[in-house]
Image (cartoon, rainbow, N blue to C red; front, side, top):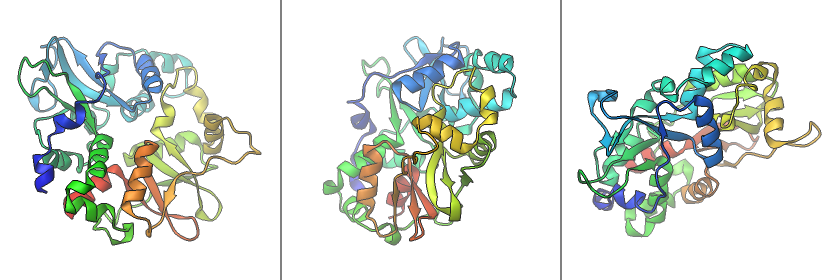
Length: 314
């Protein structure tokens, strides 16, 4: 782990573009549209300094901004489902509220920054399920910008530096079945094509996961339902969701008729090398991939959190 202890998180985020953040007063509906436009899953929220006490009581102030949380699609949808039923006027009211209202809908929205400056310690935080964190300038009054470090950034770094670490080289070149998985016994969360969409989304939200497997006849994996599918959701569509099945929603998402097959989800098997699976996940910006058996039934799921955990445990 010497290489990872010496590598700095600021080196990872330095090439990233300027941070996209939004004011606490921004309407939720505008944030959903921003997430869709930028094809991102979360955004940091700021307000004027001194108005908020964030998680843990620490002030995260940079310049004239106090960062008070990082709101994700999961936070917003959890909040919206809790606050409104099916009436259009309710949906309009909820989505017009300030985005700061959604902070705390999941525990992760309150985990907004990290003090650590080395990759090894950052991995420990991400291994607990945190998907993103702000990296603050090293020195107060520094010209460095605030950047967002994500699990994708960390796994990209780990994958790209296999040649510099015997541990990384060994782990990434191992087959999935041979890896030390600290959470090998986790349950697979799935829904069926015929399930009501709202019921399926509630399963997703209650399980506190970002995606669930959609299975068809015989338990075969057919698609994936993810919170990212709800980016760009507008108030006028929320009431209609209760009338859709999972199949209806997925076909609308892919602009497919009922005579056309849905896009096959990316899958892997226990015989695949972690290196190959991770490269595909990073290339297509997948946060999870289902591991299937010879019957095309999902038996396990591999996430970016898992990859970080595997390396920490090796």
